[in-house]
Length: 351
Length: 149
Image 1 (cartoon, rainbow over the protein chains, first blue to last red):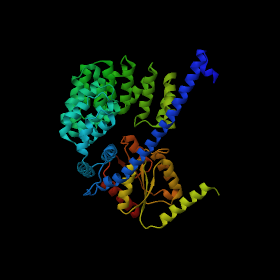
Image 2 (tube, each protein chain N blue to C red):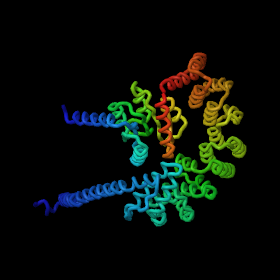
Image 3 (cartoon, rainbow over the protein chains, first blue to last red):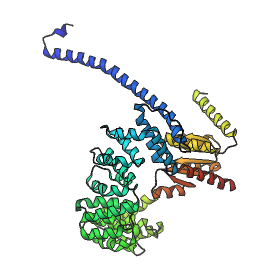
Image 4 (cartoon, one colour):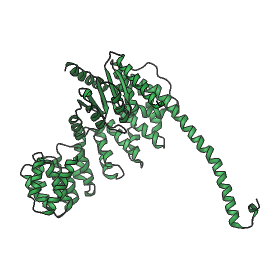
């Protein structure tokens, strides 16, 4: 142990570092073990609780029990998650029974309390439950949560607002979905599907025509996923109002009806290659028999992506068979057109 | 003979006894969501079916290899290890299972999934969220059609 009292500072430093590491290990091992033990206990408690409440919730789909077992404070989040899961997995009259059992179990009062918590998980669960219960009394609190910095909380709040009162929610939600770039578009689109098509279509059409140009392509994507009847008319107006490449690309991506074929054909020669890509894709979706010749010409485009999408569009036309595709490939004199069509034919045969 | 083989034989023996011991129709349910699995089991049992559960695609395929054809298969599309399409293809690869009706119950509502399922020989496609009563009515209907055929 002479080195412990050595005057050499490096030896001293190494010695005391070693001692510190040993102490850290001595404290960390029991800490890790206790964490593990707590996790196992928590899991066991959760399972016991689920074993009691899962059959109750399932039986409640038939008839509501007269007496419900008491719920301990720390079991409420488990009940919320279980109830939310069932509610979101079922449709029809089953939901009415779930609502009744939630009110009977006191979930409404607890959810109102949890809504005021700062922790994300309880807030998320409470907002979801209140939305599923269509509880109008907490409208303002949920509206506040919709502008929360945390995307999970704000998205859950947006969904809850739509569930509670979709018409009242729209004027508040539409500006939010334009501005919140941190919200994943796929999740936003899923949530928008919760609203009735006529309500969401009217609100989105208005927003697409009156929002700043920067937000238009994002809004058009949502407009597209809802598949509104008025989409072609609105998108034509948008193109007239904002004739930029980004807006044009987004609109061509969104066109689904043959009513827009004139715009699609017109933009096959656009100077921006990404617009041409969307135009050939649109032609693949809704093109007529004569459009196959236009697509064959597009196989010679200078941009690889345009050629590739043109070949895919050609192969997806319902009146073009595999034999027709082989014939078109053999007839090509352009090397690039031949190559890209051969690639798409090979890809199609692999699927 | 290894302990694992013994265990497997015991399981197969149990399943065969189980299938032979009842007069009720058997429904095989492949569902990885514990709560939905519990709900389906409860509803089908209450309706008078015997239910065999599998919680992932691999287990479902193993079950299919072990038992004689049941009255019906209720299949989730998104299963761990092997998805619903793979399990369905496994079912259809067995000649004795060829007339077993398969109902898909899934959260995937895209047109291409539905078309692919029907092309693969599925007899019905139910999208989650679903109505429990409607699901049971569809199960009854497909069993009736199968019996009539």
